[in-house]
Image (cartoon, rainbow, N blue to C red; front, side):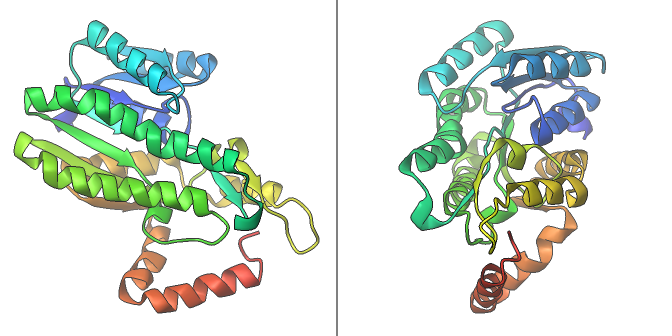
Length: 275
């Protein structure tokens, strides 16, 4: 990933999980890295880790669901750093719930961060990249942006939107020499479930969140693996980057036979295998 050496990168949601891993991989490749997060302590810790790799680093406290905060961040960033070469739209939240039980406030929350947060970021940053006719954009979607899952409608909608956004921008921005890729991770050992709103119950009426949290911790892939795959794919101009390997089987089944995949999803949901 030497292509990123000497570049300036922005990673949203860089205080933990995949965002932190992307920031550290970019730093290891020789890029200066700026991250955002909602929690100052996480910002401070990751900025120190980035600087320990011998590159410049910066951290900005931003809630990406709020247009004004994203716009203020963009203004501060370009005043402080002047340019962006690599833009990683990564900030996101997790959610689970039965469609009849999901309050509208949860829809607002998930789409506000996962969808509108990306829109606000791109609105403020892409014109600057077009002016320079240069750059890379990595949009963190999800394996669930490639295949649907029951009990996760708001999250799935937001991630399908990210894949579509990446593919649209990929075609539109190519003439400006800007590469766009969609990163589609599967089950990863991050805090997205712990920090998310998981309002599902098992057949005994007990909350399923502890079970799901434990599954992600014990079976989830290393975020560093996802970050390496994502940045390699971006450098190689890949449109869609499913990672790790466990994403591929159901992705291929869905591509080859949506009807077969739908039957599998119904069985999984009916037997409470997800919860």
